Length: 193
Image 1 (cartoon, one colour):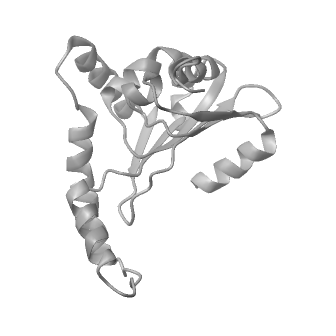
Image 2: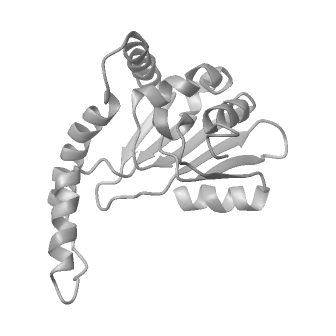
Image 3: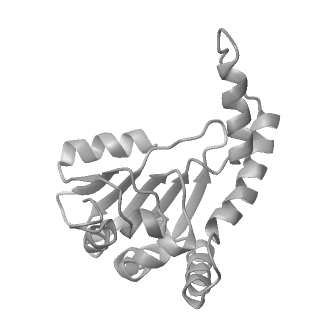
Protein backbone atom coordinates (compact mmCIF):
# COMPACT_ATOMS: atom_id res chain seq x y z
CA UNK A 1 0.00 0.00 0.00
CA UNK A 2 2.09 2.86 -1.33
CA UNK A 3 -0.43 5.69 -1.81
CA UNK A 4 0.33 5.66 -5.51
CA UNK A 5 -1.10 2.39 -6.82
CA UNK A 6 -3.18 1.74 -3.69
CA UNK A 7 -4.16 4.46 -1.21
CA UNK A 8 -4.03 3.58 2.47
CA UNK A 9 -7.25 5.59 2.78
CA UNK A 10 -8.99 3.14 0.41
CA UNK A 11 -7.50 -0.07 1.82
CA UNK A 12 -8.20 1.01 5.40
CA UNK A 13 -11.74 2.15 4.58
CA UNK A 14 -12.47 -1.21 2.96
CA UNK A 15 -11.22 -3.11 6.02
CA UNK A 16 -13.14 -0.83 8.39
CA UNK A 17 -16.45 -1.64 6.70
CA UNK A 18 -16.05 -5.20 8.06
CA UNK A 19 -14.47 -4.30 11.41
CA UNK A 20 -15.83 -4.23 14.94
CA UNK A 21 -12.92 -2.28 16.43
CA UNK A 22 -9.84 -0.28 15.43
CA UNK A 23 -6.58 0.24 17.30
CA UNK A 24 -4.23 2.88 15.95
CA UNK A 25 -0.73 3.89 16.96
CA UNK A 26 0.73 6.80 15.01
CA UNK A 27 3.14 9.62 15.48
CA UNK A 28 0.73 12.27 14.23
CA UNK A 29 -3.04 12.56 13.91
CA UNK A 30 -5.27 15.32 12.59
CA UNK A 31 -8.87 15.98 11.65
CA UNK A 32 -8.18 15.82 7.93
CA UNK A 33 -6.97 12.24 8.37
CA UNK A 34 -10.04 11.40 10.45
CA UNK A 35 -12.23 12.89 7.74
CA UNK A 36 -10.86 10.39 5.18
CA UNK A 37 -12.06 7.31 7.08
CA UNK A 38 -14.95 8.66 9.13
CA UNK A 39 -17.62 7.48 6.69
CA UNK A 40 -16.30 3.90 6.92
CA UNK A 41 -16.87 3.67 10.67
CA UNK A 42 -20.64 3.02 10.79
CA UNK A 43 -20.27 -0.63 11.90
CA UNK A 44 -17.74 0.34 14.56
CA UNK A 45 -19.87 3.27 15.77
CA UNK A 46 -22.75 0.87 16.37
CA UNK A 47 -20.61 -0.78 19.08
CA UNK A 48 -19.92 2.42 21.02
CA UNK A 49 -20.47 0.69 24.37
CA UNK A 50 -17.10 -1.04 23.90
CA UNK A 51 -14.85 1.99 23.12
CA UNK A 52 -14.11 0.36 19.79
CA UNK A 53 -11.61 2.91 18.48
CA UNK A 54 -8.43 3.36 20.48
CA UNK A 55 -5.91 5.91 19.28
CA UNK A 56 -2.38 6.23 20.65
CA UNK A 57 -0.60 9.37 19.48
CA UNK A 58 3.11 9.05 19.98
CA UNK A 59 4.49 12.37 18.81
CA UNK A 60 2.23 14.65 20.79
CA UNK A 61 5.17 15.68 22.99
CA UNK A 62 6.08 19.11 21.61
CA UNK A 63 8.85 18.88 19.04
CA UNK A 64 10.93 21.59 20.70
CA UNK A 65 11.03 19.59 23.94
CA UNK A 66 11.92 16.40 22.10
CA UNK A 67 14.64 18.08 20.03
CA UNK A 68 16.12 19.63 23.16
CA UNK A 69 16.23 16.21 24.82
CA UNK A 70 17.88 14.72 21.71
CA UNK A 71 20.55 17.42 21.71
CA UNK A 72 21.22 16.95 25.42
CA UNK A 73 21.55 13.19 24.92
CA UNK A 74 23.80 13.60 21.84
CA UNK A 75 26.30 15.71 23.80
CA UNK A 76 26.57 13.30 26.71
CA UNK A 77 29.16 10.55 26.50
CA UNK A 78 26.77 8.17 28.21
CA UNK A 79 23.07 8.75 27.76
CA UNK A 80 21.49 8.10 31.14
CA UNK A 81 18.04 6.52 31.23
CA UNK A 82 15.66 9.29 32.23
CA UNK A 83 13.72 8.68 35.43
CA UNK A 84 10.25 10.01 34.70
CA UNK A 85 8.17 10.59 37.79
CA UNK A 86 4.48 11.41 38.06
CA UNK A 87 5.13 15.17 38.05
CA UNK A 88 7.23 15.07 34.87
CA UNK A 89 4.73 12.77 33.16
CA UNK A 90 1.91 15.14 34.16
CA UNK A 91 3.69 18.17 32.67
CA UNK A 92 4.40 16.24 29.50
CA UNK A 93 0.79 15.09 29.27
CA UNK A 94 -0.43 18.68 29.54
CA UNK A 95 2.05 19.79 26.88
CA UNK A 96 0.96 16.85 24.72
CA UNK A 97 -2.69 17.90 24.89
CA UNK A 98 -1.78 21.42 23.78
CA UNK A 99 0.43 20.12 20.97
CA UNK A 100 -2.28 17.63 19.98
CA UNK A 101 -4.76 20.51 19.65
CA UNK A 102 -2.39 22.09 17.14
CA UNK A 103 -1.95 18.78 15.28
CA UNK A 104 -5.68 18.23 15.17
CA UNK A 105 -6.43 21.42 13.30
CA UNK A 106 -3.23 21.69 11.24
CA UNK A 107 -3.65 23.25 7.81
CA UNK A 108 -5.79 25.91 6.27
CA UNK A 109 -9.30 26.20 7.68
CA UNK A 110 -11.96 24.55 5.55
CA UNK A 111 -15.56 23.44 5.89
CA UNK A 112 -14.59 19.77 5.59
CA UNK A 113 -11.94 20.15 8.33
CA UNK A 114 -14.48 21.84 10.60
CA UNK A 115 -16.95 19.04 9.91
CA UNK A 116 -14.27 16.43 10.68
CA UNK A 117 -13.52 18.11 14.02
CA UNK A 118 -17.23 18.11 14.91
CA UNK A 119 -17.56 14.42 13.98
CA UNK A 120 -14.47 13.52 15.98
CA UNK A 121 -15.77 15.49 18.96
CA UNK A 122 -19.10 13.60 18.78
CA UNK A 123 -17.21 10.29 18.61
CA UNK A 124 -15.09 11.26 21.63
CA UNK A 125 -18.12 12.37 23.66
CA UNK A 126 -20.10 9.24 22.80
CA UNK A 127 -17.22 6.97 23.77
CA UNK A 128 -16.62 5.59 20.28
CA UNK A 129 -13.07 6.96 20.35
CA UNK A 130 -10.55 7.04 23.17
CA UNK A 131 -7.24 8.87 22.75
CA UNK A 132 -4.02 8.39 24.68
CA UNK A 133 -0.75 10.23 24.37
CA UNK A 134 2.71 8.76 24.80
CA UNK A 135 3.88 11.19 27.50
CA UNK A 136 6.87 9.23 28.84
CA UNK A 137 8.57 8.89 25.47
CA UNK A 138 7.71 9.65 21.88
CA UNK A 139 6.49 6.79 19.71
CA UNK A 140 6.97 7.03 15.97
CA UNK A 141 5.44 3.66 14.99
CA UNK A 142 2.53 3.52 12.57
CA UNK A 143 0.00 0.74 13.02
CA UNK A 144 -3.67 0.48 12.04
CA UNK A 145 -5.15 -2.72 13.49
CA UNK A 146 -8.68 -3.56 12.34
CA UNK A 147 -10.45 -6.19 14.44
CA UNK A 148 -12.56 -7.97 11.85
CA UNK A 149 -16.16 -9.04 12.30
CA UNK A 150 -16.90 -12.74 12.34
CA UNK A 151 -16.28 -15.81 14.44
CA UNK A 152 -12.62 -16.20 13.48
CA UNK A 153 -11.66 -13.00 15.31
CA UNK A 154 -9.30 -12.08 12.50
CA UNK A 155 -7.33 -8.94 11.95
CA UNK A 156 -6.30 -6.72 9.11
CA UNK A 157 -3.27 -4.66 10.02
CA UNK A 158 -1.44 -1.93 8.16
CA UNK A 159 2.12 -1.34 9.36
CA UNK A 160 4.36 1.21 7.72
CA UNK A 161 5.14 4.88 7.40
CA UNK A 162 1.70 6.54 7.22
CA UNK A 163 0.55 8.85 9.99
CA UNK A 164 -3.17 9.40 10.58
CA UNK A 165 -3.14 12.58 8.49
CA UNK A 166 -4.42 13.44 5.05
CA UNK A 167 -0.96 13.12 3.49
CA UNK A 168 -0.33 9.87 5.40
CA UNK A 169 -3.54 8.28 4.14
CA UNK A 170 -3.41 9.45 0.54
CA UNK A 171 -0.13 11.27 -0.09
CA UNK A 172 2.86 9.89 -1.91
CA UNK A 173 6.09 8.74 -0.38
CA UNK A 174 4.47 6.27 2.04
CA UNK A 175 4.78 2.52 2.21
CA UNK A 176 2.64 0.20 4.33
CA UNK A 177 2.36 -3.55 4.58
CA UNK A 178 -1.10 -5.08 4.83
CA UNK A 179 -1.09 -8.10 7.14
CA UNK A 180 -4.05 -10.46 7.60
CA UNK A 181 -2.39 -13.32 9.50
CA UNK A 182 -4.38 -13.99 12.69
CA UNK A 183 -1.31 -14.77 14.85
CA UNK A 184 0.53 -11.65 13.65
CA UNK A 185 -2.62 -9.66 14.42
CA UNK A 186 -2.63 -11.03 17.96
CA UNK A 187 1.04 -10.10 18.37
CA UNK A 188 0.34 -6.56 17.18
CA UNK A 189 -2.67 -6.27 19.51
CA UNK A 190 -0.46 -7.39 22.41
CA UNK A 191 2.22 -4.85 21.43
CA UNK A 192 -0.40 -2.07 21.55
CA UNK A 193 -1.48 -2.87 25.12
